[in-house]
Image (cartoon, rainbow, N blue to C red; front, side, top):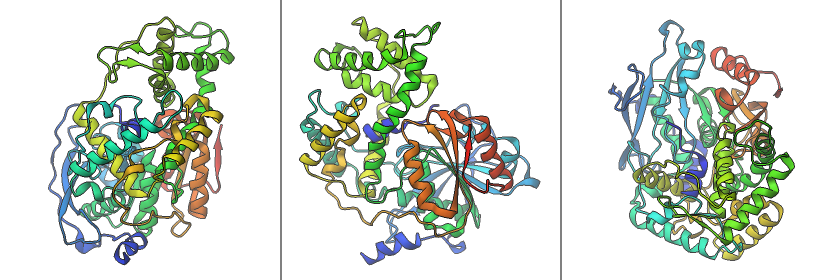
Length: 491
């Protein structure tokens, strides 16, 4: 099953506490609990994969208070004599789950890595089947291309109204749990999982938003880390956090659209939309503007019309993976003729409600967002002028602009304090986590990290949209601990 992507979850979507940010509230050997492993539910899983639940504090400033459960999966090392430890598979999101990944993308790992580690998946706090959060959002607020896309004229007034409605629903319906969903708490939960597994140190492969969680784990629990791979990396700016990730799309689209344009103008391509690559961008902009003025009815879709923002959101989703280029091309070809493509498959409403709640809780609890309409209008206007493909969306308002709660702790600042055991891998052209943001994370880690920059296109570098050189470098590090002496470029 394809993992929930960042657009779906971003757009769907005191003294004690200060002490937590510094110490991580780690789990000692005395905190370890015995795990009861059972057969996992679901289809298509490796029959050896096992599942369990780990109890963790809902509120780490009250560690003896109410507990919640984190669902965990494990695929044991395929060669016990070569086993080194456990490898956490940290999912993207916020709102992603990696419970199936030991049987899924974990099987793409080379044999020597699967021999060296138990592969560990999990559902982050709030995500089913862990203790689950939901906001009870109206169906229209789960629609494709809703928040934070502005109106066709660039106004953010309706966006702010939607943000207030979603924030209010989450505050009313999310219960106490939604107040404690955050990236730092996900990292703390992972240390409780490590302790429950009986591991003194743990390795990790964090992908996309998982790269940020992996970074926080490495900052909060440096003495608990073994070999850490951070793939497709988020900007760790502690003053902005999720706002920086959203803003990155305007750069990421500009980095990637030319690759789509070359593909979409190639002779012999059955989805060819223009004769020259230079013609694809103006064609897209004309179609988006026309659909802003004259949306097309789209029965069965949510919303039930195909407007300019639906086209733009489809572009955003399609640029994640060159294999998805045909989806955007088919929409361009259809709308140019005044027709619509088939309605795409969508996750169940319960899954979307769950992912939206965790996405909202994470983004809004990680850091306080500006609350002024004027702030978002100014940013949207500037973005529309400089980056017309994304029409101002990356600087728009999220529910966090109306979040009624204050973050319980300041964001964690990534520093160079800790062991040098981190390998970053990053594609040059990545729509969601562009190279510019990855370089900020690399600078923050200093000598703790080395970065492998891969001359490739798409989101997800290692064993996905990268190249053989990057894959070999990461696999060698996980299997043997051998890491390049300095930052490396994989042409």
